[in-house]
Image (tube, rainbow, N blue to C red):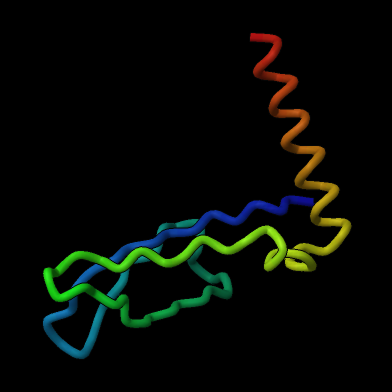
Length: 84
């Protein structure tokens, strides 16, 4: 089971009310999600950084199976680094 998803993220300022996107070949014919929302900016034009969630707020975010799979993957990756 592959729990990692390839995502494309682009932040831009639109000058008109339509947008055309070009998808990578591996996404053609697949169900995709496109989300557009406003990113708040400070008066000086800087982006407002979102607050980082507390660990207690993340409880239950992943299923136990996903959590175990991710934990195993991290452990395997660390073990591979240790052998280099």
